[in-house]
Length: 572
Image (cartoon, rainbow, N blue to C red; front, side):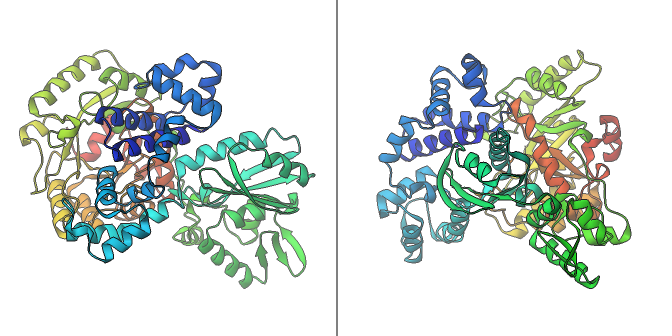
């Protein structure tokens, strides 16, 4: 099993336990473990088989959870989860995915109205029965109706980070087949979309049947959907469809271009080919009946006098205009990032100490790390008041005396309050190296209210960056209502930055928002929002998203050393 699949199991256990009203500490243990495992870069499967004792070295994983991880890896199932599922109506997990609902509210709906599926939930809302329940109301009922489709969609699309683990497992399996000469993933996964539908693989082989036979032995296949001479489709146990296509070597580049897409990009490409008297498809580029290109993607694009576009840009947005002007951007890369400007420690809701986070950042080659623990408004995370924050900064000063090649930044993630204003005194914020401002509460306010709160916060002289700007959680929570254009205009006016939060369930800004920031000249900060040392590894997901927005090294603020970044912000 992949790390993400194991984390999903623990999340499901937490949801079902909470639905049943279990001990909150037990629920929290599974939730924290799921978050840690999802961010872990080492393979849990390899740890189980090579060094099972190392599981308990993972923060928050004790003997009981380590045993459950090992059992999942070795058997693919967990008796506790099966037991909880048997005790719970089958559709409840779908109900809990609706934005605004969770295990507790789902339990209320089931107990009071017998709701155990999305369809029953839709019927109850349409009949206006939900609004009369304690803690709901008419507005909540309306939001639930709006969120039902999002919950249904959540069952159809997979986070890119999860898809990446599946892709790596499939590639590892397929490369064990000696008949596979080349295999590459395509589709929306290759373009780096934040969520992925199906997974597509293209293969070069002289023996298609042997390749299909080998693919059929992949662990985790729940159903074989179709099999032909050159294509096989299966559905994995987690619900993802995987298609494997065998293509001729002379057409491999054309097939990679075609099946990578996007559809809109391919439509433009076919129109350009037609204008030149050519035909382009997954088999190649043809003049009449003669194939004139197709072995590589460079050949396919070159025939049309185009550069070979990075897959992330193939969305028919700006890439063809850039090509026509000879100005295709050199996209930002992970190696360009010098520092991480949003991380948490065990002073609030993080899992590791200041020193552990700093050493982990240094080991990853970063030059600086901003410790932006929550301010006091986030009481559930034991947010810091002014006194505790200053004590933390004193410790940071002591730690910084150790290093010449690295710096911990004295920072804070300060809440933008529901009524407006910031959660800490101006005098305290003025002492920080870096101030992260964010919206955690009042996300149901009107577009005008939220936008004004954020615009006013950006005008504050201490604020450096607006974090996770739309508040979205992929497959779980839609963006709150905000005028992003007005926010970006304010960031430009006041010389501030905007965050691209790299957490795979956020990726907020989205790619379109990144492009909007680039066009306005607002620097983007690619941060991890790490709550553990392993959380620092999600930076690559943010870089992938930035590339989809066309961002270069110059567009990203934290590609600069800290002294240059301070100059960018006009800070002494």
